[in-house]
Amino acid sequence: MAGLFNRLKTIFSAKTDQALDKLEDPRQTLDYSYQRQLELLQKVRRGVADVATSRKRVELQAKQMNAEVDKMTVAAKRALEQGREDLAREALTRKSGLQQQLGDLQAQHAQLSEEEEKLVRASQRLQAKVDAFRTKKETIKATYSAAEAQTRVNEAFSGVSEEMGDVGLAIQRAEDKTLQMQARAGAVDELLASGALDDPTGFGKDDITRELDAMASSSQVEDELAALKQTVAIGDGRQDAPELAPGTAQQAPGTAQQVQGGEQPSSADAQQPVQGDDRREG
Image 1 (cartoon, one colour):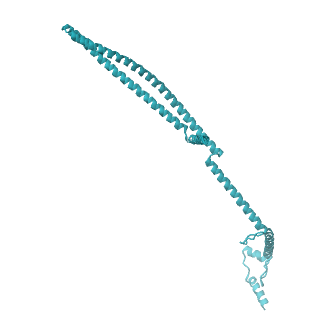
Image 2 (image 1 turned 135 degrees about the vertical axis):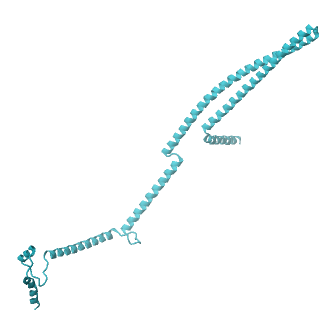
Image 3 (image 1 turned 90 degrees about the vertical axis):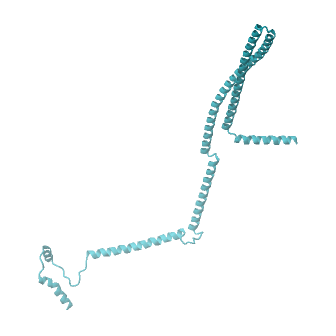
C-alpha cells in the first residue's frame, strides 16, 4: 500500500511539474528574481541607514558626556578652592562614572562604525551583483524572445503549428471533395453518353445518336448549299442575256450614236415601234 501511494505521489509530482513547466515563462521568472534582489538591496541600505543613525546618536551622547566630565572637573576644582574637599571628592566620583560610560560609548561607537563599514561594503557588492544580473536578465530575455519568435516562424512555415495544421487539413479535405465531385461528374457523363442512363431532360444523347444527327445536319447543309448555288447561277444568266419586251425594236448602232451625240431622233423614227405594235395587235 505504501508503494502504491509513493507511485501516485511521484506521478502527481511529475504531472504537476510538467504542467508548471508549460506555464512558466523564463522572462517573468527573471523579472521576479530581479525584483527580489532589489528588495534585498533596499533592506541592506535601510540597515546601513539604521546603523549610521545609531552611530550618530552614540556620538552625540559621547559629546554630552565629555561636556559633563569637563563640568565635574571644574566643579571639583572650585570646591577645593573653597575648602570643600567633600564636594570635590563627590564631583570627581561622578566624573569617574561618566568616564566609564564614555568609555562604553566609545567602544559602542567603534563597533557601530565597523558594522556600518561592513554593511556599506555589502551594499556595494550587492549593488554590483544586481546591476550585473539586470544586464544578464535583459540579454537572456532578448535572446529568449528572439528564439521564441524564430520558433513560431519556423513552425508556421513547416506547418507544425496548430493553426497551420488546421489550414492544411482544410485544404486537403477541399481537394479530396473536388476530386470526388469531378470523378462523379465524369462517370455520370460517360453513363449518359453510353446510354446506360436516361437523360430526363432529353438533351443528353449517346454517341450514335449524335453521329446520326451530325450526318443529317451535314446533308441538310449540302442540300441547301446546292439549291443556293443553283439560284445564284440562274440569277447570273438573266443578267447576262436580258429578254426584250414584246414590241420593242432593237436600236441601230447609228441611232445609238446619234443619241449619245446629243441628237434627238426624228418623229418618224419615234413612231415606228408604235406602228409595229399596231400591226401585231391587228
